[in-house]
Amino acid sequence: MRAIIRIFLVSVTLLGVGACSPRPVLDPRPGKAITAELARADALVAEGCYVCLQDALAIYERIAAAGAAPAAEPRAIDAALLLALRERELGLGGGRALEHAIELAGRQPPPYDIGVFLSVAEVQAWHAYGVPKERFDETMRPLRRMYEAWQGWRAELLPGAAGDIPGGYYLLSLDCAARPLMQDAGVEPWKPPVGAPPLLRFRAAVCPGAVDGPALDALLRGDSRWSEAHFFLGEMALARGTVRTAEKHLVEALSAIPALTAARVELGHVYLASEEFQLARDAYHQANAAVPGQREAMLGEVKSLSALGRHEAAIIILDEMERFGTWYMGEVYYWRAWNRYHLKRYDTANDDVLASRSRMPMDGQVDKLAGFIALALNDVPRAEREFLAAVMHTEGRGGSDCDATYFLGSARVMQRKWAEAVPDFEKAEPCYVRAQQALRARIKDIRGSDLPDDRQDVLVAAREKDIAAARLQEARSCYNAAVAYANLGDAAKARPFGERALLHPDTRALAEQLLARLGRSSPPPFGLQSP
Image 1 (tube, rainbow, N blue to C red):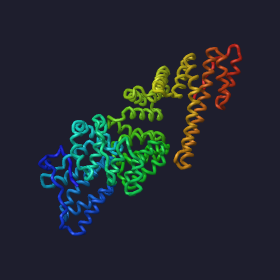
Image 2 (cartoon, one colour):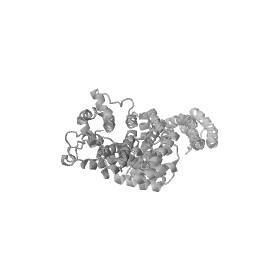
Image 3 (spheres, rainbow, N blue to C red):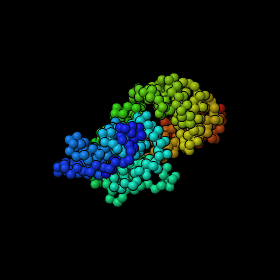
Image 4 (tube, rainbow, N blue to C red):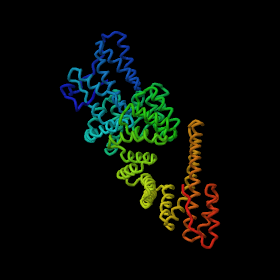
């Protein structure tokens, strides 16, 4: 194999960048044992799984250190280069394979061309869940260079790619990174030849945005050591909503590669989606301990702690995220406002929700939380404005928010704006009906999912509780619409709403009183049903 990397940040003197030097020929003098070891390492490289590459590098370096075969050092460089890309694909930000390859190359006698590989490696993004955002951003600067140089890099790699495993692997990686540029230029991606080594088939299968699940399954059937394939299959399963399948794959990946923080973050997403909040918190917490500053893990831990009612612990993480700055600041202030609101620290919660709005100015959830905080601060006119903004921003995106609509009506009747409140309650009633229908559909999805029965039961119980709450809010909307119409003196429009409120046990008594009083010639003002 031909060892080639491009190093544009290391001196020419150190690395001897120049014309490609030929690969040292296997010295015929090594004994059979050494030759067999080299062959075993070569086979591990062709197989290409992460642990295979680690084992191959160890063999090459052991032989090189003993001075037993001159071919060992260049092959060690190749193995380190392959591991360098694998570290980026998996988000193993603690790895030093690329730096190690540079060190090894620097020991070779000049001229030793290790040209294009470093250029390609520098533009390969780290998996976002495995490194802090700052490390992920480092890829952006070299990417700008790729816009000008990618065609030259391809021209260097393409001629020998079919017979050179590192060259083929790096060419596949470059084509993934430069895919939009290639499409604009009308250049077709390189495809590994028939019978290509598993390593090249793997790289062709994990191009972002075009992951080939069947190809990864085939690799695993051929060799169970391909643990990193489980990681990509887990991501695909989670995207499809098959959370149990995702969990199985991610656990398999982590059992073989415990340092795979990205898989731990994805596992946190699995448990958050299945509302197993303690398991989600534990997964995110372990990711945060391994990679401080991993923002997705920090935010996931905050959401898990918030759901568990551990508001103080959530705020500690949010304070740290605020100190880090830059990423997810709108979410940071929203969740800190949410947790402070639940701790009844309304003044500081208000400061946070306003800070969140400055970064997410059209987010209906931010508006709704601001409305609840305004109510807690007894600023009813502002609460009306906030809930109105929540309704407008949510509906402007094609959605609906039953609670924002309901509380908009509530804020208006607190100010005796009966005529303005009536449409809000009229709209909230069918909204809660649709919410119940959506929750029943969700229960059907849960029962048809790949989750074990006991975990399905927990989720179904939670959704049934949500249905009961929505049904109660539907009845309250009916009752409050009836009250608003009654206070406007329109008994004919009030009665149908009052009669529907009779159907729920929590509003039945009040609805009976309202309907009885509607028959009087001068009924007193009616009061609302509050949540």
